[in-house]
Amino acid sequence: LEYHASVGCMGDHLVVLGGGVPDESYEAFQRRIDAYDPAEDTWSRLPDLPFPINDELAQEVVATRFEFAEVDGKLYCVGGYRGQFDHFFEARRTFVYDPATRTWTDGPRLPYEPGRNEHGYDYLSAFEQSKRLCIMGNFRLNDGGARLLAFVWDPTRETWDDFPVPPDVPRRMSVTQVDGHVVVHGHDKSDQGHITWRIFVLRAGSRDWTEWDIPAAVQNALPWPLFYAVRIG
Image 1 (spheres, rainbow, N blue to C red):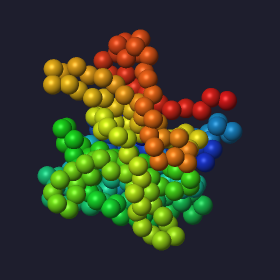
Image 2: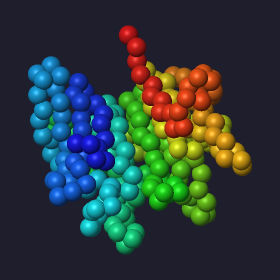
Image 3: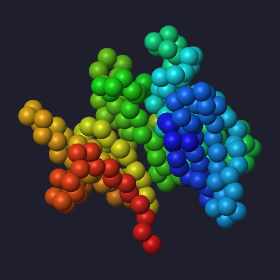
Image 4: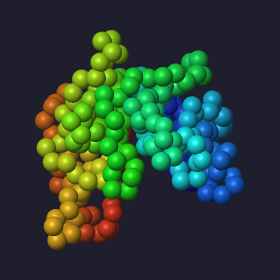
């Protein structure tokens, strides 16, 4: 399950969405989702995804930018899907999996369509904050422009509320949330091509981002370092 697979958690289970290898075995994994129970040391098959995973081998409808997050015990998949050559697309559509009923249903439509990066992929991150779905990404606005925005879904009022974004917009951004702290990692690129990696942190209950220093040994060690927020203890 190594090709275009997404890995995360749902309750006390590890979940793997998609995967396979880019050959004749790949098609079988385009909609597949599996769950691992560490207490029983067993894998189980969950109901298929309602859309195929994004890949260059799909012949019909593919996901635009596959992102998911567990929110209050349910799995939210965001980013919608589009057909080949944008012939048909629903990039603002979301899906929700309820483990209690083992069913997929439509979730809230995104407030704007996700914008595409230089590689043609839609950029969008999803994470949980105070049992609510949060999204952050580069969105296409109604005036034709695009910029980094973030929103939190209020299920009671069924509206998207603004969520704070970092003061500077790093490229190739990733977003992680742990214990209410939102961590954004990305890089700035100068006109001379020099890359500087940056980390911004939004503490629980705050709307003001803080930039954390990256040790020089890490900053200079790898051309494309990856950072993840994890809980210790």
